[in-house]
Length: 380
Ligand code: SF4
Image (cartoon, rainbow, N blue to C red; front, side, top):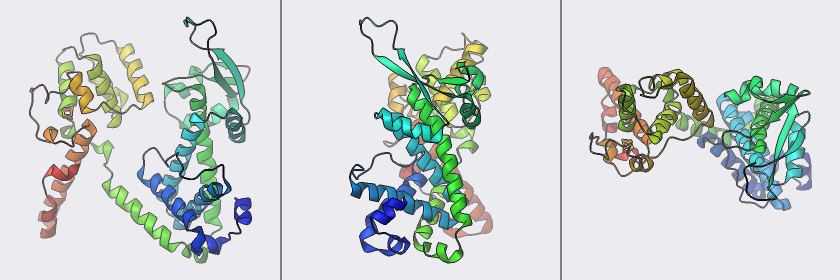
């Protein structure tokens, strides 16, 4: 960062006001906005060629500018959000990195060491020369320190192969060893960013922070807006569940067989609605082929994979949409924009929240809220 600043003759004043560094500020704001708005963090693609000095300046100093702005906000939520966005971005980029030398350098920066063992792929391959795959190992001390922050049985030390103080980071849940390792590194990156932000905030006085009042104001307002729009998914009411979900639960509770697509959808939907594995498991206890251990294992696997629940189209094709089959009628499901069961939940929640606001407003005799109680047509 120091080199980028000095090589480009940029100081703090020019970073804040310099006309020619506008692209840096725009990129910094964009990174902050993406960390606020996108669940998957800051977009991993860049518009600039980062192999060119100009691209390095815009990306590198855009990151730096964003960090100063979030620190100058002294808003813990904004800092947390930005750190999460940047750490997720790093996770994605590292997981997909094809330049092994760079990956190793970054991994060794954040972990005390890494070791590589090459394994033969798919033993059942009919080809004489099979492609090899890389499996990483890391020191047990790193694993013990980082893994408790990640949920899922994969990250329990007892579930990982270990040898002479090294833990094997095997592939799992559709991710290869490099992607699994990137997930661990993400936690260290998060830690470093949090420490750096704390340090910055401790060393920032009011006068310095005031220089960033304008971008800070914009970001805090954006965060407020996002928060007010966010659905409190954990507080989801049973009445908000879409017909495809309730029909799968009803069928199972009546001992009817629900096909694989329906079961998988129910598990993924339960996770997306933040229901516990115990709650999800309770849906299956009356299934004709119910086995506690197998169900638990399969649910654990799907919960850990964090899969998005299936779309309406997929459910219709798998004969798991009761509306499409004419078994129930639901006005919400008729809208063209209703393409995913989670949209159904969100629409229901918004409607309920509006009704609650309306009821409160009526109680307070505040008439202006009435204008907000439109039909759900706008929920797309
Ligand atoms: S239309 Fe979509 S949300 Fe509604 S029941 Fe069918 S699959 Fe579920």
